[in-house]
Image (cartoon, rainbow, N blue to C red; front, side):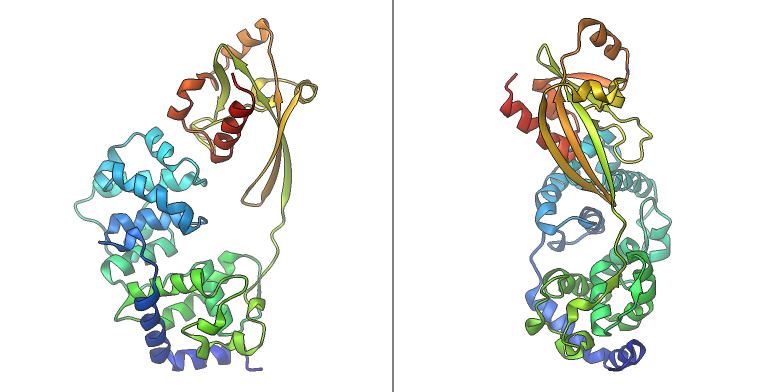
Length: 355
């Protein structure tokens, strides 16, 4: 079987035919998405950040609500962070929302929107992928986008059996090939076509090779096992267990709000853990168990148990002195920002155990 380098050379030699096949397919079969309708720099950057590690079907209602309330960089720049996070609630990875907010403030203060990838990479929260996507789509910049979808396509096209230690290494490795294949007459459409191909045809599992527009150029399908590419080293999963309290008193629910400088959930609310309450874990574990929940965050698999806790008067007084703890009236829960899983859990528990 030819080497990866040989397959890459053959692919580059057939670049014109590859580009035509890809673009012809995209222009007929691309999905009708709101950020592609009357596209703008603002729509593109909002959609790109929302779509990071999130499926299109999940993003669609969020994008519609966001654009209705924050239609441009100026509106977003002027919005309070609490409102920005509330509109993002449930999408997860909230640093994306904060970065988008900072980005809007920066751009709103500039005399003009930057047009080159290098300028965009200087902006808050913008990496090479986002810079390439925004500038190629909005300004025709000659910059290839490379994300997990593009890595998968290029690894299969060249039957690249390299075992990459992580996605970042894979992106760095295949970027020169992505640049070499870029359609310089239509860079934005080419990049969107690659992303569309990875999302709808060249999927991680059960790729739809028989309807793939670039099937004829793919060494991976000729190998008989395209799913074998790319090869990424398995992530080391860390398991965490957290014990949380469900405390209702006088029609109010006790919640913990993360500090403004917290890494993941700054200024967001969750059910308090035993540590948040200053309690020994055994104290909570001895109370009635209401629910067991699981969630995943990056490399962490988190198991959480939620226990009904009824603090005595002295404990309530002590808890009131903790500025990170907030007694939130049940009627006001919709006005605050909860992390996505905790919003679901609180809703479930309120329905199951009416206050």
